[in-house]
Image (tube, rainbow, N blue to C red; front, side, top):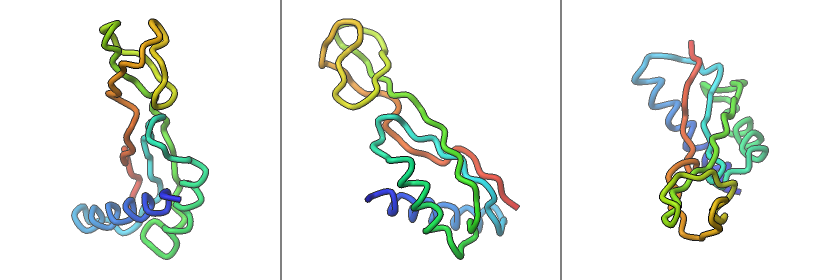
Length: 113
């Protein structure tokens, strides 16, 4: 379950930013998670609550913004939406896709005090 280590990394970022930006409490964390990022959102929510206990983000809300996967189809020469890695191009059926969006996770916004 790599979601636990993802949440530990999120906490490290929150602590670093708290020192740099002079805040002491995190109320809400907005995460953008790509459809192709291989992150199980329910496991992430559970892990977030566990990891944040006793920290500056204790009782913080976690808001998840899902980002669709996109890839460049080489034969079609266009961007296409994909639901998972190794999908076929919905237009031509090709496997020659280069993922260009939706495979990452990032902290988009924080509500702090």
